[in-house]
Image (tube, rainbow, N blue to C red; front, top):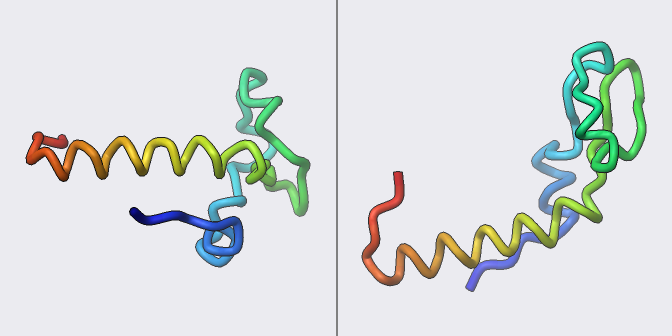
Length: 68
């Protein structure tokens, strides 16, 4: 099974969010902060959920299920 690390996410730029003026208040708990008018996503919260989703998709693919 694949496992994505925080370093992988940082290299891919996953932590960069939208401009601060376009934010949704519901996302507040997932935003680490802001830099140069861009929100920085909290990867400590993102990483476990991403790996859960990755495992789910791997199970579907292993079972030859359709993924849209």
